[in-house]
Length: 242
Image (cartoon, rainbow, N blue to C red; front, side):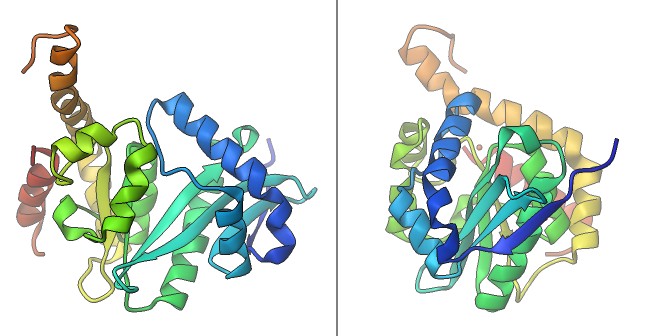
């Protein structure tokens, strides 16, 4: 079967009519996953398009296929590639990775000194980020800008985040620091080496973070460099920093 081809462009004012469908798909996808993302209005998405801080994907036939945008925090010290969404018919086609590569390149060009970070609950996105040179980190290494964390209020897990004093939640934090980073080949190899552990740690992390809520609801019994050794210790700290 021939692989689907896509056109991935830096969005501009001519793409503003797609803002509503993008917002609707973001919300629908979050509900299907049972996790939350910061809700954005069509006006906000349109603003990102006008500013040239977003990428948009289409099929060769002009059908909308995906989107992602840039946000800046802490006076430009941190950049987040947010709102990654792929239209359902084109998922598992490799498009998400292509969009992430394009928005990462745009971020590096527009904000060459900024640290680029992301929060994700998905192993697939972790892999894509690892291929770009991101590493798992603790929440303390992310922006502490209150405006960023306020965007999590619409997430279903916000109570967990605040209960942990913004030090942990269901998402895994990942960071690319242009001044101090491993090469993508290294982070990719590290992800492949530990992918099964990552998956297991994420399940354990979610179980531990949700335990107090199961207990409260009466549903449970109670109970988120250098060499590879140093990185493994950092990984354990990241996932078990409860």
